[in-house]
Image 1 (cartoon, chains in turn yellow, red, orange):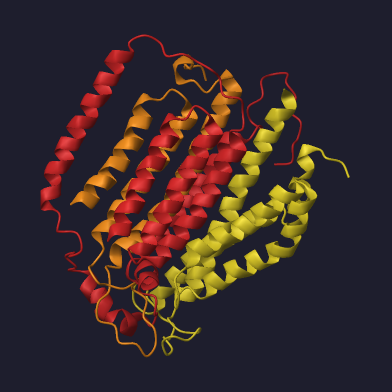
Image 2 (cartoon, chains in turn red, orange, blue):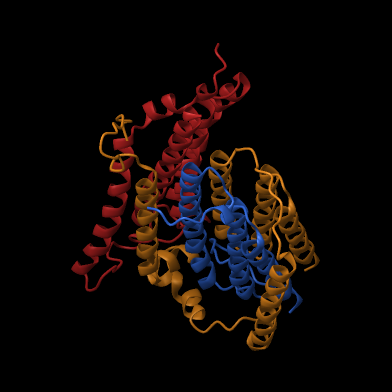
Length: 150
Length: 182
Length: 112
């Protein structure tokens, strides 16, 4: 196989990435969903999800990674995350004031407890993950163009 | 508490190595070592949320720095007025240290914090919000405005990077810019 | 008190790097080190002797927990530091493309 630089890294890296990148994504989703019973939360989980896509892009080159998630999908996810967070906050007006915790709080230490906190975690993880991956893609594309000109 | 002192001394040595190296790749790796030591210090100080976040954020920061700056380092020599610059910098840092050490006398002693507001969060956190992770309940229920502000900052940073890097909108009169699907 | 002095020395290392170095990438590394020192200072203030982490678990009686409020503030601050670093690196790459060097004493023109 050709060894051009933009086609990714060597064979060992490609095989290991193919085996583990799905597990990294799943781990990130686990940390987001259990944000209210164990350490973690929306920010750490979102960054781990972005790191799984970065791993795919570094090992296989940018064409394969951009086929899995396109640029319009990234901007859609980021906007959806931000609008979801705002709409959950505005819905607190039905109970009294801004950001009121209006869903019923179940029994503690279970997965479906704590009101709006899991929904807010999911919204924040979408926003952080899509935004950070977009920053990385744009910086890599700039450097690639810059190397081509010399 | 001896491991806390050892880890802090390790971080300071790592920072000094990162400053004085001429090779950029080694300096970035030394900053990575400082960040890893910081994450272990957060674990020793009983803050697991913060330790997880610091570890993954530092990894992404190193990847961005490495990917963007793999260039040959330009050799340059120091110009004149070296002595004056170093004296002014040393004077500034000494003045800063003097003011900061006088401010340390007002801090509470290490290990006995004044928790006026946090006592309420600790006692009633589980009852009022239903979350077992009290740090999550502070971020997303008691102080949710700060999280809204932080989401805005991330959005602004993404817009800023995209505006700096793009090519369309910068062409001169006759130049043709190829559509690089952005 | 010695712990606070060590944290302050880490901040001064970052400050020296920002003031005295001529390479833009070294200045960015100095800003990163200064941010680490500030976050460390917040968590040091929040520690309680013999405390445990502020996460409740079922069936165990908790008496003594560290302060959760500075931990919430530092969690936000770490992600903001990443956003700032990304913006600085994008600016540095643009400067290299326009002037051909990373040396700040050779960037003297304010042309747009």
